Image (cartoon, rainbow, N blue to C red; front, side, top):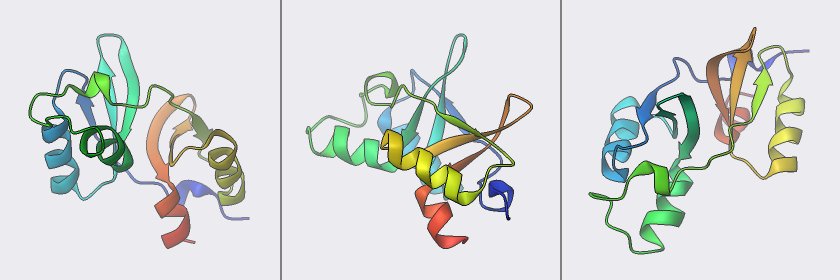
Length: 122
């Protein structure tokens, strides 16, 4: 059975939690990606997906030029092993109502897997 290795997005792109929503949106557009890992002083502290920008910035009328990522990012970073199957990843996303998972190999984050990746690369 095929693993998620061929479906995940690499390399992992990250941004610091003090950055603004606008800076994150510009980076996502530039890199043509739908999520970013968010870094803090002690490593990764969250994940920011496109839907976070829509749900938390647009729908609440916040100013993306001044809103820090720390106030809108998802704080749950759920990981799945590189050798997992698409079915396993999809089940995990459904169970936790997530659109993105980090993909790990030997406990190191090597990629990000999105629902979009599962649908378009299957």
